Image 1 (cartoon, rainbow, N blue to C red):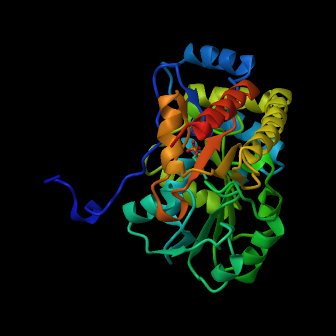
Image 2 (cartoon, rainbow, N blue to C red):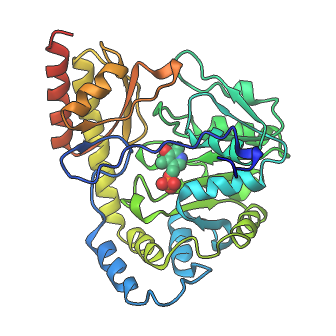
Length: 350
Ligand SMILES: *Cc1c(COP(=O)(O)O)cnc(C)c1O
């Protein structure tokens, strides 16, 4: 590390979930969709590939137009990026001059970005039941960022509760990361037109079958979107590539497929919640496409036991949640195998 800038010497990079390159695992560790993209999305990718000698449209006009109709906002209120991770990084670079506050248990990238960009971070513990107590944020005058529903807890807050934070201090920015909102959360997008200090970030990675395409969006009033454009066009105007833009457009145009996938995921989530509770697991009431669970045996033991049996789930080596597992909702068949396998593990002598 002899050439590393001193400012980055304390940086601990984010550790992504494992992505095995063989198909022999049941993969329930990174909250991707259990379903493939719609056939029209695959066709759109192939057709976009025929023009890859050209740079993409830097305005991403077609996708922006379709997404603005879908979300019910104007095109000037939409920003697109290479996954919501890139957009969140831009937020930390440009919108956190007075520091940032977020929960102790939340999306791991927030603390990584704070370190990367040297932003002072106020980390606020979740309550004992792992919910967010918004009252504790009331006096904070820097930017507040909340994942709603939160990850890895799977718990959501009512939109009205977050809106109160937004209304309390119009000079304070509130960023809401809605990566999982489609699975049962309450979106703040409808309120963006009324509040200049509200930015909502969303992704095509979880509910739209496009994690590999890397596509995210932000919704906010024009002044905020202009800040994000400013950073993007000072860095990489083409961060959303032409194939991904075409896939995103086709995905938004395949709404019935999107809705069918959501419905199936919510049904399988209900089935899995019941089945795990029957096995003695505590299962938090999920508004996402994953479950946060605590079993009769610690997650630190269940995680390797499942991995040995070719089932990948996510375990976090963090004191408050090391007994828990985060389990993505797969297909019904995958969840049946998960439940059977957990039953076997739990009945074995420890
Ligand atoms: C998955 C996830 C993201 C990142 O999504 P990408 O769009 O794939 O970068 C952001 N926030 C939360 C809370 C997530 O779980």
